[in-house]
Length: 118
Image: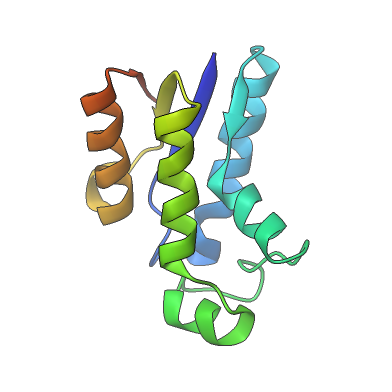
């Protein structure tokens, strides 16, 4: 199954990348293909982990320091949900994240399987 991994990032230390990486690893060990937006953010910035120097998960800081674009990130993320994903896996706390709620709503609209992670 092709999973998109969704969860809170903004306002979480290191943009919650450690939780994203752990969940992606677990899903891959189960044999699934996983789109991990944390990994994609690192790829988009030529291998630079934009979370490493961001203790508060501040989007404005990531934009200033690394040229991060939330619009670009969400465009790629939602394109994967629409074009590739069969399912979405929701990290704890997703309900408090505007982005994750939007990704969840998109997955529901498309009839994707939804997995709520603990």
